[in-house]
Image 1: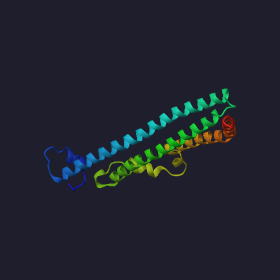
Image 2 (image 1 turned 90 degrees about the vertical axis):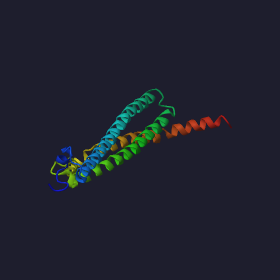
Image 3 (image 1 turned 45 degrees about the vertical axis):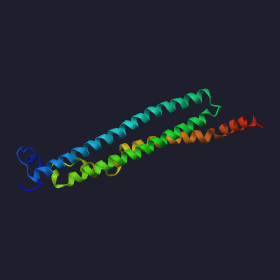
Image 4 (image 1 turned 90 degrees about the horizontal axis):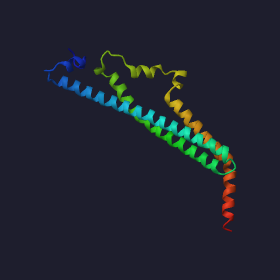
Length: 178
């Protein structure tokens, strides 16, 4: 048997203590660690987006309530700032999470391309090759970014529209001290 040809059969040999079997076991441990890290970061990214969706629903609901009851006050300006801050914060968190996922993804791709992988299917490599044209646009990243952008846009529009109301309230407040 050639070296690195079939680690799985070498690992299954219980009495083999050669360097080759130790290399295969070390390789399997590295793969398991990388896979777990990838799954952890991917899960963390999805969970943070789910939490963002809850905040999005709450802030949009709060904004609508403020619009219905306090539309002539600067509260909508503050709601716009809150919407903008939440969208930007989670956008930055998602960029970091995606970076961590990509580190593990790169390691898994390298492992798939190594001799240790053997003749097994290469799902990570195949998935990257499939993303051409429109299918590349249909991804979590683009869906997340579109949601963040739309939320930030709502916040910006509220800030721009209600800036004069806020400035007017500031002028009224400062006039008390003159």
